[in-house]
Structures are given as structure tokens and as C-alpha cells.
Amino acid sequence: MIIRIDEYSDVPIYMQIRNQIVMGISSGELKPGEQLPTVRALALEIGINTMTVSKTYQLLKQEGYIMTDRKNGARVRENISQSGVISEENKTELRRIVSEARLSGVGKDALKKLIDEFY
Amino acid sequence: MTWLIKVIMFVCIVPTVILMYMLGFSKNPGRKKMILGVRDNPKFHEGEGAKKFDAIVDSARRGGLIITIAVVVLSILMLCLPVNGNTMLAWTLLVFALFLVAVPYGKGNTELKNLKRQLGITKSGVTYTDITSTNVVHALKLPWVILPNALALIGTIAAVLIDLGVIGINVASEKYALTLMSISFLFVGVIMVPIAILMDNTRNMVISRDSNINANYSRAKKKTWADLFIAMSWANALCLIAYDIVLVFTSSETAVLAGTVLYSAVIMAIAIIGVITQQQVERRYDRDTELELQDDDDNWILGMFYYNRNDTRLNVEKRLGYGGTINLAHPAGKVIGVVSLLLIIGSIVYLVYLSATGQLTV
Image 1 (cartoon, each protein chain N blue to C red):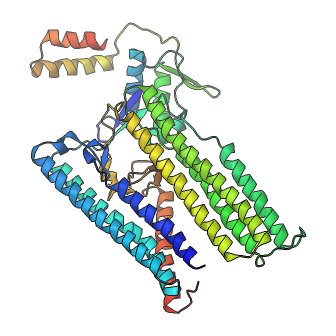
Image 2 (image 1 turned 90 degrees about the horizontal axis):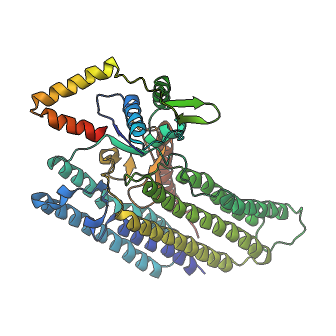
Image 3 (image 1 turned 180 degrees about the vertical axis):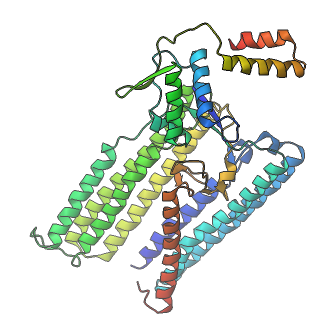
């Protein structure tokens, strides 16, 4: 799975990694139970501080996407708990995206098509 | 006998300068991922940009060719001169003159980066990483590098014991010549171990969306490096043992110099095979390259020196030639850079001093 890091993005690097790992799990690129690189290895590979990767893994663990232990390192969770609801934070983000799309003249159908494509 | 010294210098300098020219100034720049240390871009081959691009590349290539021919011609002329202190200084300075090939390369690199800005090609700061192959792609089998060095160590211990008289063998060569020769070879061999490990741990390149392609590409490149270091370690160890045997039975300087010529030729041959294999790997994976790789051209000073404060890695893949180089923004990289620079300047100053005071003898 390829991760793209943009140094000049407004989104912090730990969040960029987190977002792309979540997208990877959702798309099936990262399979349930799949081993993730160690904090040190990933930090060396990307060329960033180990604390940044550690922060990403802590966040992913907190959110229930991955599990970590001393023996096996980090793995994608076999059963990710499905609450069936969109968080308030994501709702706000979605509202912003829809608003910007409407202001740009993007039709509802085009937006729905895009959602179908990504889902 | 002194003609052998000239042959050694010739064998070292001429293939190196030709290799540097071939690696730095590609014959078909449009087909390469990297041109003069700048990543290729479709805009370099369109309209007005193409004209400027061709002019820059042609000018750099011409400059490189002139310097290469000058070094080769000078080397041939030096072969005709007798070996004395002054010509030895000239030979050594000719070794440092090899760096001049990098001047048109650096100039071309700066001009191409300016052209990029003019054409509005800005994509710096983006890094691609394949997390599937992180820390799993390795090709170096460490025992194969350690084993020849262990052999070299045994040879060195034997040499020390012979010179100290612990082992009762009458040595034909001068006292401690055996020990000094063995230690220098052992030193070269031991230095190769951490470099081989560093090269095996370089960052995996992302050339495709397919993780298998990325892993295979990185593995193929690392395998070439691992094979190169293993071959060099064995050549080094076998040469050490051969020298030990030769120096025990003869004090002939001709034999020693002939051995040095052979050793230099073997090392050169191994290096050339390594470069050819790397080129084959690049050609093989050219058609699989689908992603625009990270644009970090601005982090490469003159296309040769890597300086990136936002990168915590110490070693990165080279742009000019093959192999690795250091990140000069890394604290350890700064120390290595300054020490290397001082060593180069110090060597030149010391050689000139020796020559000026008439102490440089053969």
C-alpha cells in the first residue's frame, strides 16, 4: 500500500498517515490481521521522526482500527467495531465538502456518483 | 619497474573518468528518469521548454566530454614521462582532477532546476512510501561479507605472528612489510561491512502502485549491491592472502606491483559489472514505472549533495552514479562531510608540500 506524504500540506503528517491507513483498511488494500511496519521502520522509510509514527499508531489504536502488542507489533484489527453512525466530526467535514461542491456547481447526482465510487 | 606504478595509476584513472562521464551525461537523456540529477518531466520535451532543455543538456555533455578527453590524454602523456617525485604528484593531482567532470554536471543541474521554475514544474515536498515492503526487502546475506573478512583477519594475525617471530618462517620481504600490507587490506575489507549494511537498508523506492513491483525493484537493486560488496570482500581477502604468501617467499617489488595492478583491475571489473547490472535493473523496471516519484530535486545541491533538514535518514540513494550518499543536513552527515572535505584538502596540501620540499620520492 502506497502512502503519499505532502510536507507542505496543512494536514499534519501523523494525520496524513492515519487517513491513508484508514482508507487502505476500508478499500481492502490492508487486510484484517495484516502486519503493519514497526514504528521505527516506517519512520526510517518515510524519513520522519519516530514520535510522529508513534502518534499515528496510538490514534489508530484508540479509534479501534489497529491493535498493538509488544510481541507482534501493530496489526490491522480482525473485527473493526461498526457503530453504524457517522461521527459529528465527519458530518461537519462532509457538510463542508457538500457545500464547496454546491458552490462549485457540482450537481447532487455527480456527488452521489462520487460517493458510490469511493464507498 | 617504475612503469608498473604508471600502469596502476592509468588503470585507476582512465576507466573511472570514462565511467563518470557515461553515468553523468546520458546519450539519450529523454529516456532516463533522471537528467543531470533532475527528474525528467514531460514539459521538458514540449515546445520552447524542449529547446532550452536540449541546449542545457548538450552544453553539459560537451563540457563533460572535453574534461574526460583531457584527463585521458593527460594520462596517456604521463605514461611517457619518467616516474619521479614531480610526476607522482602530477598523477595524484590527476586523480583529484576526476572531480572536474562533476563541474559541467553541477552547472547543468542548476540550469535545469531554473528551467523547471520557469516552466512552473513544482511538486517538491511530496514523498511516496510503500508500507507493505517497509523493512522486509533485504538482499544482503551478512555471513557472505563477514566470512572473507574473517579470512582476512586470520591472514593478518598470521602476518603479525610471522613478523614478530612467533611463527618461525624466514620472511624474504622487509620487516613488518607483511603486517602493514595485511592491516591495510583488512581495513578496506572491514570498512565494506557497514557500507554493505547501510546500502541494504536504504529506503525502498516507489515506482508503481503495485507493491510487488516496488518490492521486486528494491530487492533487485539491493541484490546488485550485496553481490558487489560480497565480490569485493572476497577479492580483498584473497588478495591479502596472496600478498602474504608472495611476501614470505620474495621481496621482489615487481611481484608486489604486478599484484597491485591485478588487484586494481579485478576491483574495476567488479565495479563495472555492478554498474551494468544496475543499468539492466533500471531498464527492466522502466516500463513498470507509473507514478511520478517524489520531486526532491531542490534537496540536491548541484545534483550531487543531498541536504534535507526534513529527512531524518542518514543515507540515501545517489543521483550521480550508483550507490549511496549521506544527508548533509543530518548531524552525523555534517561531521562526515566536513571530515571528508578536510581529508581531501589535507591530502592535496600535504602532497604539494612534499613535492615542494623534495620529499616526494618513489
